Image 1 (tube, rainbow, N blue to C red):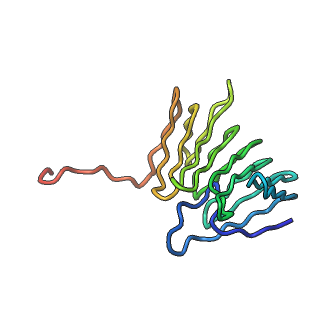
Image 2: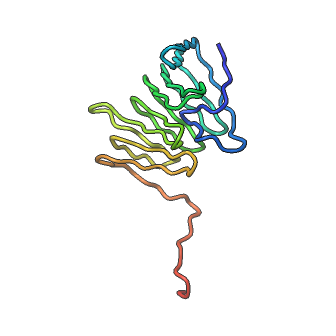
Image 3: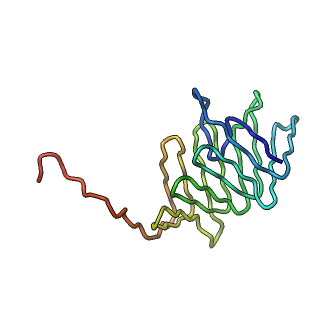
Length: 161
């Protein structure tokens, strides 16, 4: 089943601003609980949420809605993968909060969060992705290899040669 929803993406969107891009959801099944104000998306093999250049996939998404029926918080579990441009994040679970436009990915014991950005690979226990700012923060015993782009020129301080 394919369902198109605006204002949702664990990659997702942020608090309502003018012209928020729509989110496309591809899932095998969608279950709405009006009483509990939750929406559950399940996929075989995966649920896919896509907004512009960001795609989030996982086995299951459980979302809480606000009084207006809009998704306020979503939790993604099972083989979580977020791809945005050249960056790929893999983790065990991710939580997206609409009000802050931030997704938080966590690894399980012995399985860290992995960020691959081109030739660079970095791992840690928690990754916070601010989608509006395109800012990634990785925490918890961060290790990896950062490879600078080939055409990167060094910055010079003003007045220095």
